[in-house]
Image (tube, rainbow, N blue to C red; front, top):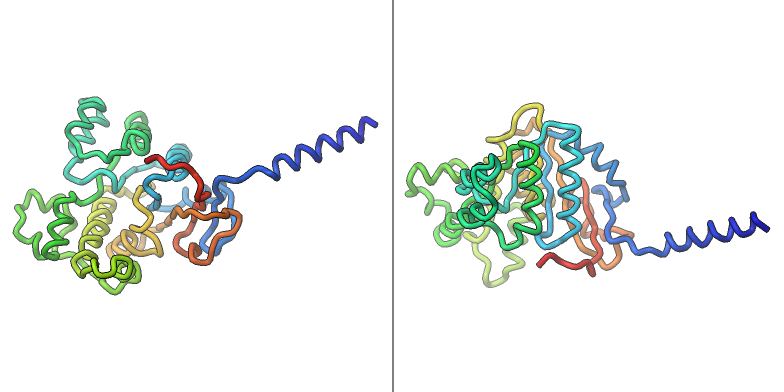
Amino acid sequence: MRKTVLLFSFCLSFLTVSAQKEPYMIYNAKGKKVSYKKMLKTLEKKDIVLFGELHNNPIAHWLQYELTADLHSKRKLILGAEMIEADNQDELNDYLSGKIDYKALDSTARLWNNHKTDYAPLVDFAKDSSLVFVASNVPRRYASMVYKGGFGALDSLPAQEKKWIAPLPIAYEPELPGYQNILKMMGDHGSPTLVMAQAIKDATMSHFILQNYREGSLFLHFNGAYHSNDYEGILWYLQLHRPELDYATISTVMQEDVQKLLNENQRIADFIICVDQDMTTTY
């Protein structure tokens, strides 16, 4: 009788666990499920990792923090992010060194509206761990200049301001599928200069990643998934300038069913975090 009760209890527990909804799954590029541990083991061997997020996705932000902490325990780590622009590096450094507090950082740097909930934990991890955190993105006013007048609009900038942009002239391949897809998505609102504005962001983030990368370290960079999906965007520029380095990419997608990765979401990155589409957002 006791064995019967134990067997019943085990079966009930198994059914309860099996019935739980998974909020996310991790897949490799071929669409095979992999564990977080497996992903970590692969990434810890790399030189540069691009973590592509959906900006309002809490699972992505949580995994960014977990991955940062776990990689830091295994490698010398450098952090960087699209979400802070290059001309705010001094303010960011002052915060990391303790010269200013969060209130001062928020008032002097152009932080994203969701910085406090989604990115401050990463910046604070860098602060507490004495890590470099790179403000990698082009200042938005320069991306706007490119959108209005192409790359040539940057030529007249003072030398000091050019330090916040990838070196001119900007290498550019407009036929990359990701750039062409921007034109398709925007329809009548698309233009060649719109794609150039995307490219100046990719080129600048790549530039500051490589400028701050140190041999023997692992650079973990946080960016919107579109900036590194399909091994393009930032990665295209990284491989153009430093093809010998070992790179890896992560992307984040949302699906109705996370138990099987849709064909359209396969091969967009080395690892794909597939999140339930009903997941709450951070904004």
